Image 1 (cartoon, rainbow, N blue to C red):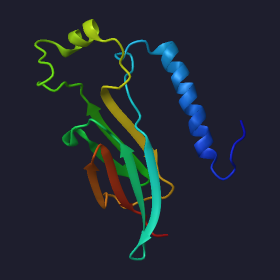
Image 2: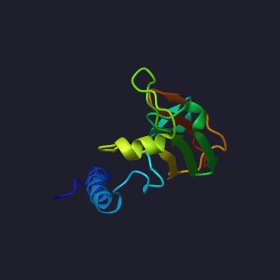
Image 3: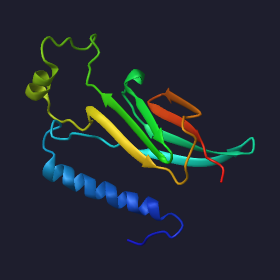
Image 4: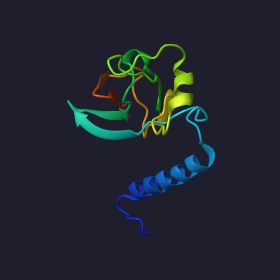
Length: 149
């Protein structure tokens, strides 16, 4: 496998995915063992009105908007949330403990439920508060203004 010199992170992310799958097979035999999930993040840099910005895109499908927390400290962005398992009541009405239902009835569980946490070190310090944050179609978008040198 050769690494594309123009996009080394793309190749490294493929290696990370393969290693993660192997570790999951070896160490994670039950969804309860995984204690934390790191969502995928994309970072874009752009200019607008003579200012530089970062646009951070975080994949958070199945999350309730009010469970998302964002904190910012200079160049460190922290995102946390919680994904809870639920079933539409028109399909199945579970009485009692949902974990008991899962343990007794699951055949395969590939999705993660529980705490989601991600720290992102940005290339440059940003203003102390996000310019704008919105959650749309399972994606969190955060616009941050870069501090001028």
